[in-house]
Length: 475
Image (cartoon, rainbow, N blue to C red; front, side):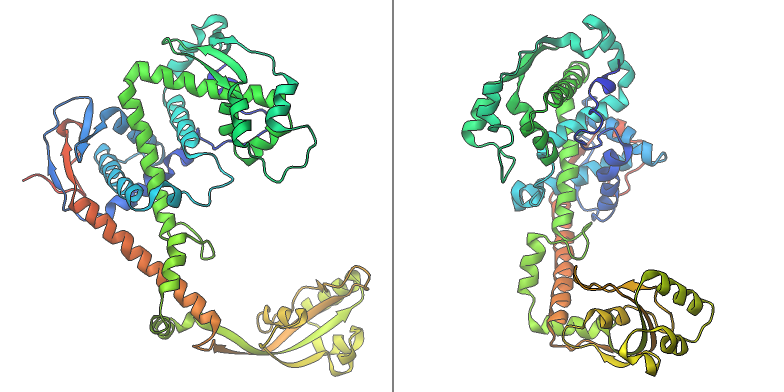
């Protein structure tokens, strides 16, 4: 059995982050290429690195050639023509910006809002192990075949039975109502004392995986499985954790611990840059918040709101009133029949007089002018949602459970547009958030410029496959 198969989640169980997907692995790196392109070429750059194990030093800290090579191979899966030099420049830009992000904002602010996901270190370990497994799978399979039994089970030295009373002390009694799937301090201590399996890795590393180790590697769905006492899930997760440890143990023996840890740092840098961009409004939708955007929006003044309003009035166009007709029908079958006649060219007013159950049927279903004010009823909202001259599909009225159902068909004959009032709450909300995003992007651009301007970058000329494009060349 392959390492990937032994560590794969069971069908119907928790879905872990897809670390083996090239798209998932490369999202941060390829986004980083765009990031690096925005950096001004003003860093202090030289070619002082002679150590073949290093690709560069960034402010004195090493960037290993192994990390660059792995990142480049991953990037080529998405962009086959990408150069090693372009990837190196990206990694340098991300390392600088990630360091500044951690210093300026801290981990808590960068990763706020990720409550249902995996812990950051767990996600990075999975990404690291998944990337190595994807690139060096054949070598790993050969190592696996040399284990006792030719499988990952060959490194397992003990699987203690899980005691029910001990599990009760950690998770509580089965069926107990819980407001949160989380362990308190005492429960965590008990979970750390429960060994799920013990192992001995090929390079001599021995250890044990506790129930707490399994617990902290879960997202909300995984914790639900643990609290439900799914014993097969616990064992499957233990083997998945062991598979990651096996891959990292092999990689550190093959490439060196410092090089593998640096590759993990590359992934951590990518995540920090993505988090920094989200914090500044990049990659989130209009309604998604970030603490930084919310703070900046609160600081936007009335003059800024009015200036934005004058420059972007097209964003504040609204329907002021519509002139419409409707046909009310008692059931869906008759509504669909009338709708079919309308689609075939039937006269709306004539069909309303013939079929509508509303009091205005004699007037051809005329609703007159409907103004957009206050809180429109559902029929008015339906009219405002229709394009002029197009017959709506039959829509079931949102009646109560004991009220008779009916269907409405609407036709908007005229529409009058206007703009929202300059002093309205809607204008203030939209404008202040838009101005906040503009300020956030300006802050991010300034941070990008600053970190590169202050950087000291030493390169190993031998790792470059083309001339530098983004970083300043040494004179």
